[in-house]
Image 1 (cartoon, rainbow, N blue to C red):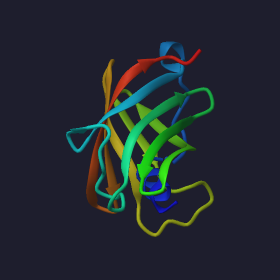
Image 2: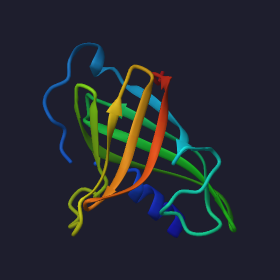
Image 3: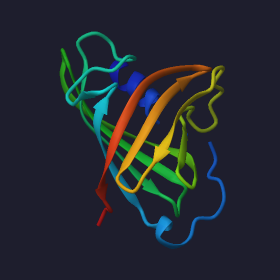
Image 4: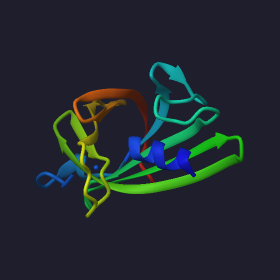
Length: 144
């Protein structure tokens, strides 16, 4: 269980900014391909020893203003799937996902901040003013 909490905390967002219309309003799905430059499966800076991320994805739903994060982790106890929804902000090519759960009091700012291109999303996990792991997602399409 600590693996899930740590990584979900590292990949999960503050209010939705503005109204999104047109093509941007369509849902978009991105699949995790690299953590700190290493291909999956791999460990991450904030994961406990012996745990690794097998797969993960982000499903952005602009109409609801949320991003759905799903992941599969593997550790000494086996493989586990988990998911969480977070609010996000998007302005042009910048995405900010606030990792503090809704209605929770977080003493340090913890966010994923990054840039979005037509095919790729690069996010850095920030804990306060300190950058942590970097995640590269590739666009995998739109959900059906």
